[in-house]
Image 1 (cartoon, rainbow, N blue to C red):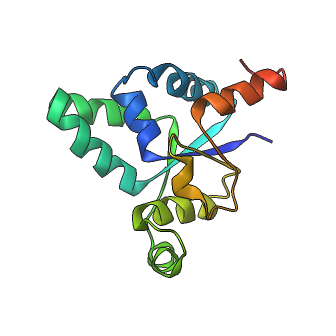
Image 2: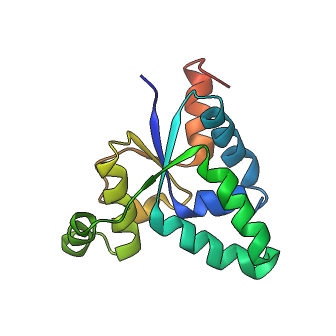
Length: 144
């Protein structure tokens, strides 16, 4: 069974913004998804945040094109009333992080990939950085 990874917004920004030194690891994860080895998921909220941040540096049309290409390899979790209500009632200190978490749970993701693990202290889903995830694959002699 393929692993289902939920990518936090910061990882998608690293990927689409080609931010060093974080780009390489996020790109390797995207390549695994493109090859069909893993599945990646993001929340609908991620796209608006990525656009808002990257469009200031790269221009709106370039960012839209990048998002369009990324959507080909990523599944999108809709922000439903159920997810919003769970986020409002959660113990997460940050509302946006709670929405990300409940999207990951809704999509049955088995790992959350983020550079801000401290934001997911309340998570029942394992949380790894992109590098930690890739290292776990190397340790298990899988994929990379």
